[in-house]
Each structure stands twice: as C-alpha cells, then as structure tokens.
Length: 225
Image (cartoon, rainbow, N blue to C red; front, top):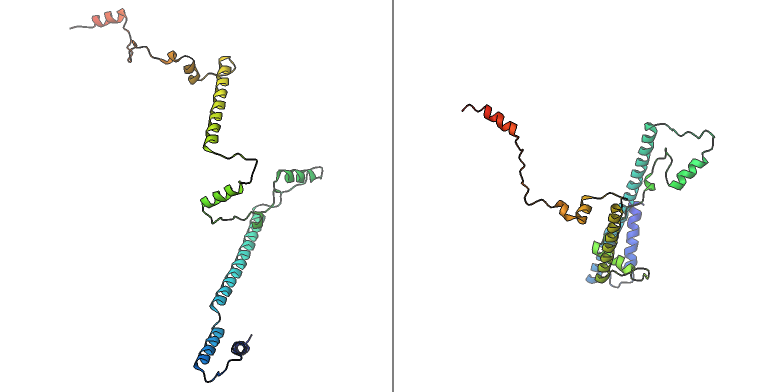
C-alpha cells in the first residue's frame, strides 16, 4: 500500500471517530480531542504495535527453526552417504519379510536408517516448582481406590515386614550351608561358634624362634673372650 493511500485511510479513520462533533473549529476541547485521535491513529496503538512485533518475532523464530531442522536433516543425509555406501544385502532366499518382521517386533530401525529431528520426542519443560509438581501428583492420586495411603504406621509396618523377610532368607541360607549345600562365610562361622575367633590370653603377641642345644654349643666354641 502506498503512503498516500495509507494516509487517506488514516484520515478516514479520524473523520469517522470525530463524526458528529459540534463546534469543531471553535471549541478548544474539541480541537484537543481531534488532535489526540489523529495522533493515536497516525502513530498507532502501542498495545497493537507490541502485539504485532510479538507475532513477527514468533514468525521469524518458526522460520529459523524450520531452516535449522532442514539443515540438520541435510547434514545427516550427507554424512550417511559419505561414510558408507548402502550395505543392505537381501537374504540368500531372496525373502527379507522375516527380517523386517523381526525389526518391527524388536522396535529397531534398519541398519542404514537415518534418524530425523522429528523422530525424537520434544522435551517439555515444567516451569512449576518441585513442591507444586509433587502436590499436583498427590492430588491426582486422591480418587484412586487401588492404592494404600502411606502413613507413619503403615511405613513402619512395611519396614518390619521387610526385615523379617530378610532374616528368614538369611536363616535359610545358613541352614543350607550347614547342611553342606552351600558355602559358609566367616560371619557364619562366627555366629556358630564365637570362641573360635577369641585369642588365648597366655599367647605372646611376639613369637620368638626357639634355639636348639647344638646352636648354643656352637656359640660357646666361637666365644674367644
């Protein structure tokens, strides 16, 4: 749209907004109002201008994102082509439906498949605090009838049950080891007989080698003093 046409459009808007006002040329208040309307139309509404700028920024961001994704996809394709040629060989019997079925069932992609940006899930960032997220999760579980609420009493009962189960498993293991069906650890032997691991009170901490009578005679023969 040319500048003249745009100015005519603005003048028409001012004329419509001031239509029917009396004493346009004599009243100072009316003249002030007309000038205010004209200034607002010519300069544009600040809120409307801000909204237009935001929409334009979003549009540019979308275009930049699309261009980046297209560039990355092209880069992946170029790297895949340069790294190795297509190595897929059909089976000897000429039927690869079985291999495709295995890939589909196991959830794996073909060997020469190039991943695209749209293959990955978008990461969603939750701006809420951790406490708010936990509270929302707790509220969502209120109406569930298949869950047991965790209280201090129920938690202590659960811990006692787990300790009892662990003690039963340990006792069964020791009994199995005593019966020759397993290996006893040092801890098991200590539990069976603690006296095996107690030192003798009369034992010396330092052990000395006992000398024989022949060694004493040899020492006397060499003593020339």
